[in-house]
Length: 90
Image (cartoon, rainbow, N blue to C red; front, side, top):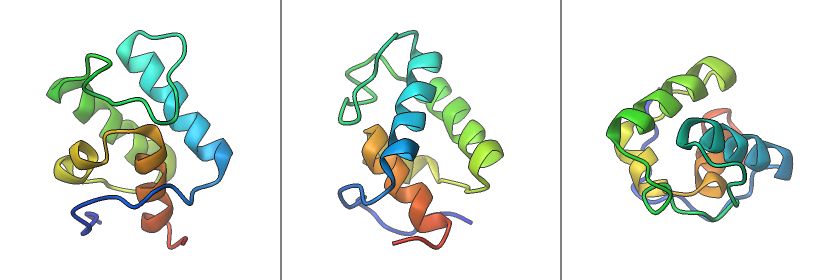
């Protein structure tokens, strides 16, 4: 399912999920520590890396994010909020 919102709201996702997403970004971007509000593009993210992360989110969390929504979200906290929305959370 593709997420419909054009802008992710501030995260209401559990802190553990936000931290998991930050760790996932760190693995893919080659950073040891990624903050929950760090910008994907400022960390050196690109389209190929974004697609890899989107695929991993689909596998790990069962939520299909659109490329557009992922790019608009830009931070682990906002991506975690999209995952929660996709899971039927708040």
